Length: 96
Image (tube, rainbow, N blue to C red; front, side, top):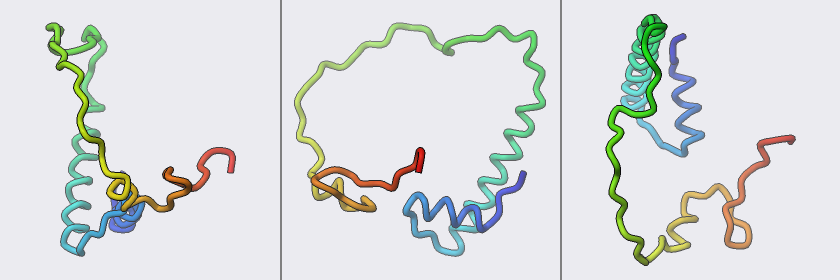
């Protein structure tokens, strides 16, 4: 599988990113490198490797809960495709 310019432009549009021609070319190359790397990883024989949940199983300390100011509504809705009654409004995806 190879990532082409049209696919990068489509992903950029869906992500609401404005990419220059140079950025599109750079992103196309980067994504193709990623796909090549994943193809190499798929070829690795892992049948004798025991599954694991995490590399490090040490206990994690949790930070205390504290009240902090939330994101301003106007700022949050700035990049929304549509806003309806103070909620993000997006096109129907399932069953439509």
